[in-house]
Image (cartoon, rainbow over all chains, first blue to last red; front, side, top):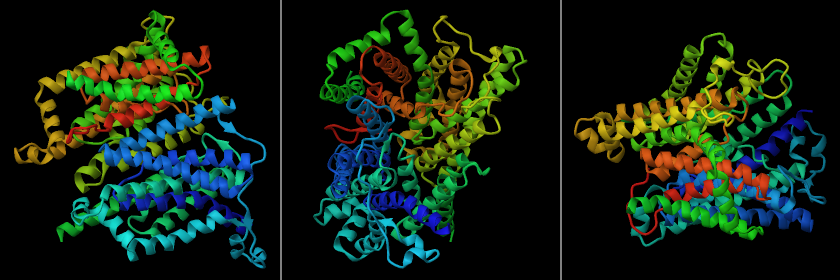
Length: 295
Length: 335
C-alpha cells in the first residue's frame, strides 16, 4: 500500500524532474525557458504516434526527444539570433504549439482532445528481484527505465556543470556573455545547445506521460507540468540536487492529491502549492540579498 | 510610416506560418483567409460578434500596455481577469435585488480593486526586494485560476449544478446590450473609453510622461528626481486593476456568471496585443479588434468549413513570437 503510493510519487516525479533538469541547464546558460510545456506536449503526442505505429518504445522515445529538441532549437534561435524577449517567445510557443497539436488531432485523426490509437507499446517496467516484497524499498521495483535515467541525470548534471569544460563554458555564458565572447567562444551557440538539451529532455518527459502509464494522448496531458518544472528549478536555484528535491516534492504533491481526491482535500488548492512555493522561495532569496547588501 | 510597417510585419509573418499549416493540411490558405475576413467583418451581425470578442481583449491589452510602458513585465493579467470575473459575478448574483445603477458600478469597482490588490505582492516584491516580477506574476496566474476553480467547485457552486459555475447574475447586473439580438454590450463602450482615456493620459499628462520615462530609462528617471519605484508599483497596480475590470466586464457583459475556465487566455493575448501596439492606445484598439476578428471568425469557419478553430491559436502564438523578434537593425527597444 505504502509502496504503491511511493511508486506513484516517483512516477509522477519523472516528467517534472527531466524537464526541470533541462530547464536548469537552460537557465544556467542564460535563458529562462517558458516554452517547456510546449516541448513536453509535442513529445507526448509524437511518442504515442510512433509507439503505436512501430511498436518500438526506444524509437518512440527518440522521436519525442527529437521533436522536443527541434522546438527548443527553434525557440532558442528566435531568442538568440533575433534578440527576442525569452518570456514572450516562450509563451508564444506554448500557445502556438498547443494550438497546433489540437489542430493536428482534428485534421489528421479527426478527434478532439484525446487520441487513443490501438497498439501503443508502453515503457517496460523493471522488477528488481527480492525487492518487490520489501516494505518502502519495494517502491523502487517495477519502475521504468526513463525514471532511472532521470535520476541518473542528477549527479551527471552536477558533475558536468562543475567538473567539465563544457559546464564551465555554459555557466560562464549565463553569467557574462561578453567574457565568453572575449575569449573566443560563441555564447549564442552555447545557449542554443542548452535550449536544445532542455527541449529534448522535455520531449522525453512528455513521452513518459503518454507512454509511461496510460498509453494515450490527451490535449491536457501535460497539465501545467512544464510550469511546475519551472517552479522546481527556481526552487533548486543553481543546484541539480536541490532541483531534484523540488521535483520530488511536486511529484509527491501530485500523487498525494490524486489519492486524497474525494476525501475533502481541495485538489484545486493543492495544485497551486508549487507556484506558491516559488513565490516564497523568491521572496526568501530577495530578503537574503537585501540582508547581504545591508551587511 | 516605418513604425506602422513594424507593427504589421509580425502579423504578416504569422499569416505566412498559418498559411503553411493550412496548405500542409490540404486547405487553400487564401480561401480560408478570405472566408475569415468575410466572417469577421461582413455585415452588421458579424461585425458585432467581432467587437464582442474584442471587448475583453481591449482591456487585457490595455492592462499589459500600462505595465509595459513603465518597464514592468506584468504577465499576471490572466489571473486578475479570473479574480475580477469571479468577484463581479458573485456580487451580481448575491446583491441581485439592488438597482442596476448601483449594482453594476459596485460589481465592476470590486473587480477592479481585487485585480489591483492581486498585484500588490509582486509589485512590492519587485520594488522592495528586486524580485523578478515576470516569474511571480506568472506563478500567481496559476494560483488565481486554482483558487477561483476551488471556489466555484465548492463554496460558490450553483445549487443543483453539476458543472463548476456560480449561479447566474441577476438581470439587473447584466450590462445592457447595444445591438440586440447580438451580444455586443456596453462593456465594449467601457473598454473603448478606457483605451481612449489611456491615449490622452499617455500623451498629455505628467503621469503618462513620467511612466514612459521610467520605462525607457529607470536610472535616468531616478537621477532627475522622479521616483521610479513608485511609478513601477503604480503601473503594476493599475495593470492588475484593469485586468480585474476586464474580468468583471466579461462576467457582467457576456458570460453572466463565472465558470471554471473563464478565460481562454485573454490575459496572454493581451500581452501580444500590447507588444504589437508598442503600447500605443490606437495600436491596442486596432490589435484588439484584429484578435477579436480572429476569434469570432475562427469559431465560424469551424462551422462552415473543416478548418479547426485552433488555426487562430497558431496565429496568435506566432504573432507573439514575431512581435518581439528583431529583424536586421540593432537595439530596438522591446517592451
